[in-house]
Length: 485
Image (tube, rainbow, N blue to C red; front, side, top):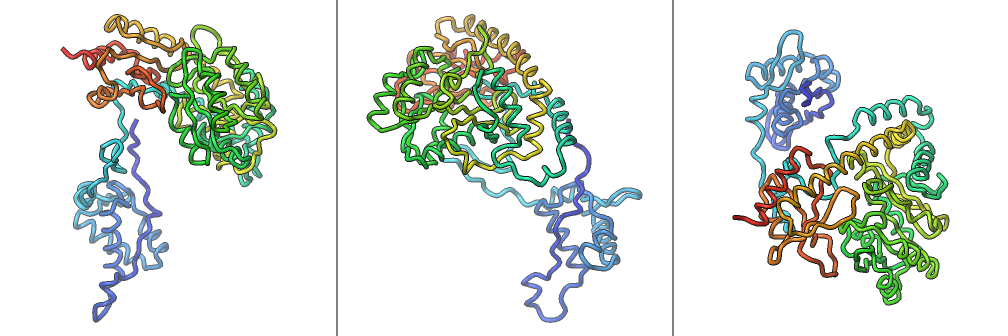
């Protein structure tokens, strides 16, 4: 629901000093009333006082500016007479909608993103395509807003006064304890609360770990190919050069990983063992054991990105890789994919030998205690249970629609997560389809996530935020794009 209450603009800064042009003119400077009028007009024209904004009462504004109340009432009266302001008995003086729109200057030419070839504008609304098949987006219609709001209220109400002015750079004790308990129950993670850092998300967790590894002399990090680009770039920004290692049906190739480690001297690897992104495979148990043995042998570290590990539909979610070797695995996770990235909270579970210094700025204390309450109340686990049911049914419906419309095209990925991979017919280029898709159909090519390994032309189809009622229509639109008549 759109907020229709007027903006209270009492704190808008108004500059009453004479302009440079005024100062250079002979004779008297403009009167205070004229300067206030110009200041108000400028604030309206540049958008600081938007249409409908409620101005402060004349006495309040006079006190704030250090002028007489007469100056303000005269200025208000003049602007009301011209239609710049609206004044009604018993109501605040407001900026006239029609005048504000007319006074606002035309938008300046916007820059273009050379990589994407699209116009950039700070005021442009984000794109929300009707048929959103992009991966990595959770079900935004099912975000538990009321339960998070309740956790926020309860956590803030119970927070000791002293904590409101205290810094918790590695995480508030309530939050770290709640996350430790949750990960112990759901992922069998072996950790004490003291080894958990509360972050804004997986990106912050990766930045913390990459920085710590660089301090210890690491120069390279082994990464899955294909994989999510953002975490690779975070590693590179913190001094670790990503080294691609191919992924097959059993996860990252452990033999190639060891070979690349020998060639480059890398002693750290970034993995998505529970549900590889984007190929959607799970790391085979034998490779889990082999990777842990490698990390111990080279005095290295496995960085486990616990991407959408909560969503497994053919069996219970498997234990985290961290369980096998708490001293050789750092785990990063967040609520971004399981709930919504808007919450901006996550965690990093670190081995005891990895330093905790130089952590990125933590989320606010209030957000952290809300996370603790959200977990302690059982709201996170209730949300995940309902989401698993919803995603399983949506995935089955999507697979059925694909089988009906394009039965000859291979679909891959285990029954987990919020995406699958659709291989395209010979001669069809995924990037061309993405570019040719209509505005209401959002697609992502597998090639976006590749580094060096060869792969078939394919689309990574996300169904996390796809409306159930639109699944069949989305597949019909996709079919028409892949096989135009």
